[in-house]
Every structure is written in structure tokens, then in C-alpha cells.
Amino acid sequence: MTEFKPLVFSGVQPTGNLHLGNYLGAIRKFVALQENNDCIYCVVDMHALTAQLVHEDMATQIRSITAAFLAAGIDPEKHIVFNQSQVPQHAELAWIFNCVARIGWMNRMTQFKDKAGKDREQASLGLYAYPSLMAADILVYRATHVPVGDDQKQHLELARDIAMKFNMDFHDKIVPTGLGIDIKVGEEPVHAYFPMVEPLIDGPAPRVMSLKDGTKKMSKSDPSDLSRINLMDDQDAIAKKIRKAKTDPDALPSEVDGLKGRPEADNLVGIFAALADKSKAEVLSEFGGQQFSVFKPALIDLAIEVLAPITTEMRRLMEDPGHIDAVLRDGSARARVRAEKTMNEVRDIIGFVR
Image (cartoon, rainbow, N blue to C red):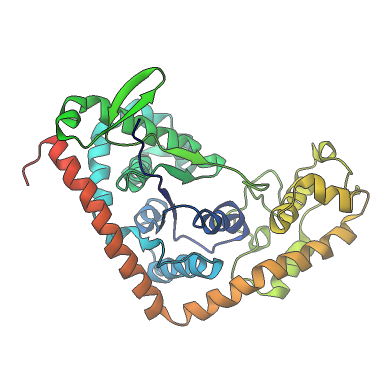
């Protein structure tokens, strides 16, 4: 059976400072995935409008995310790095997907409920419909895999639902074009134009929690800067934040089960494990029985060792915005070629005259 050509796609919003959670949960995975995959990495600047319409520093934020990609080791020549707004096919396919998706599907999206809060009537239509744009981001390249955190799995399921409904609704139009690929959905063969995208979720720290509250995810929007380690923090700031990170009075356990009910301890051990490319069990075999007064200095040294080269390179790149813009223009031009091929085929399948 023919298969879709493997392709990895992911994007990061240019809102707020990138932090350790973004690096461990996403960007470092992007770097690893590029070794054996065809990858497209996007600064999803149109998505940023759902959180806040007017941005004083949108261009700076876009360049900062791009600088982080490059500083972490993503190769923009072998792969594609671009910003979403330069490829209008994303928005075009998102409108088609708005017409494919069902209101009931969108009503189930828990992130909208969380972000809109109690006054949902005042939330923007963009915030409500943005999972449809996310599906278009992925499927305009017919990507097969997306590295996602736990909080995005529901949106990826929606992308699969949209792809399947499009495939089923236009089945009789896809077959004559010869553009589709036979895939199996359960026991049923389906001639599909869009793939059933798969999530890539792995690693010892898929969710990095706040340094001030181990029950909450590390976030750009947290009002306390002490809750996160920003990728642009200098060594003194990193040391200060880890020293001030919330802990409990007990020593570290020797077994992973001993972290249950200790969210802050679990978070710091998970961060150490991720930075060191070890398991939590390996970290506890080294530090079990030790107090945080011993563990935190070791974590500070490790965090600085891993992050300092990235921070230095990010700052160097940000001093040359022309270079960053050239990377984005080149990536966007290459992305548009791929996206327009998909859209031409979609227009033919739908029956638009072109």
C-alpha cells in the first residue's frame, strides 16, 4: 500500500519570551527530529492574534522565535524555517476547513474554554476557530507527524477529524484525480488526499511546570518572571530563579514513586533529567537522600552549561535582524511552493475554477 511521504511540521507562537519549557518540550525535539526527517518549522504569527490583536513588538517576537530555532541548531537550509503570515495558503485552507469542521467539534476544545474564561461572549472568533487554522498549518503540507505537548493532543485529533471528513466528503472527486493515497482507517480502505497526522510525544519532560507552583505549566503569561527560566536569561538570572524555586523540606527520594504528591520536587528532577538526557530514576540514583541545598546548585550548573551557548547565539542573531529576515524570506518562498501545490490540488478536488 502506498504511503504518504513522511514530513514533520510544527510551529511556535511569537508571544512573550521563550522559556525552558518551550526549549525542552518543543525546540530541542525539533533539532533532534531534523536528523532523520524532512522538517518544516513555522513561527505561527497569525495564531498570535488570537491571544492579543495589537502587538507593539510583533516583528521582534517573530525574529526572537526564529533566532531560538537557529541558535538551538535547526538548519534552515536543509529544512524550512518561515513565518506563517508570509504563506497565505494557510489562511485559504483554514477557511475551507472552517466549512469542513462541525460546531460540535469546536465546542469540545478545552483550550478555548480555558483561554476564553467565563466571559466567552467577548472572546474573538479567531480564538474559537484557531484549531481549524492549526489543522491547515499542518495539512497544507500534507505533514504526517507533529511533535506536540499533552495540551495540544486534542487539537491534533481535530486535525485528523477534519482530514477524514474532507477525504470522505470528496472521496468521489479525489479518486478520479489520482491525487489520493489508499490508507486504512480501522478495517476500511479509504482513498485519502490528506493524511491521518500522528503526534510525536516523548522525552522525560514533556511538560515543564512553574518554578513557583509545580501544579501549573511554565508559561510565558505568568505574571511572575521567577516562575520560568527564559532562554534570554543570563547566568545570574538562571541561578537566582533556581535557588528561589519552590520546594518542600524533605530530602529527594531514591525512587521515582517517592515523587508522588511532591509536584515541585518532581518538576525539578524532571528538568534535570531532561537537560542531562537521563531518566528521573537515573537522577534519583545520584541525588536520592540529598537535600535541595545540594541538588539545586547541581541543577544551576547543568542549566547554565546547556542554555548559555543558546542564549549567547540568540543574542548575536538578534543583533542582525536582516539575516533573520533573509532566513524567513527564503523559508517562506520554499514553503509557498509546497503549499500552493496542495492548494491547486484542493481547488481541483473542490471544483473551483482556476
